[in-house]
Image (cartoon, rainbow, N blue to C red; front, top):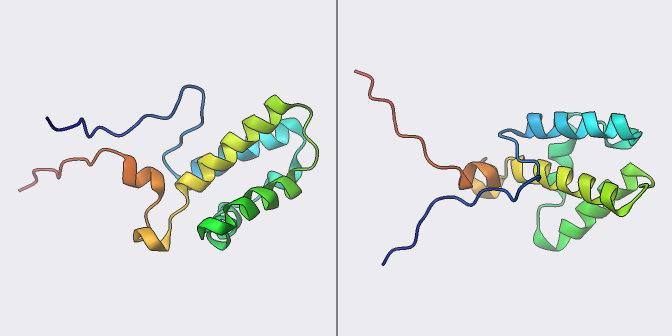
Length: 117
């Protein structure tokens, strides 16, 4: 019997945007609200940061680079909130090794081609 090939949905309450720009906008809004101005930056800068740390051994350096920008968190819950926002950006950043597509794009259901004459 063939397994269901439907994409996995993000766990409840985790941010999951359709584009890196939307993910960055969500990060910026939360960062401004909480006073983490080091996390308010452009979409291009977030993409460059993700691409710089793309190789698997560099993933932890990516997280450290983000933490260095953030400053102090007030609680473990706040740290987790921003970790989720950073993951959302990472999952939306286009990757060269994926033909310019992001992880989220690869896991979305394929839309059928329109039947235009």
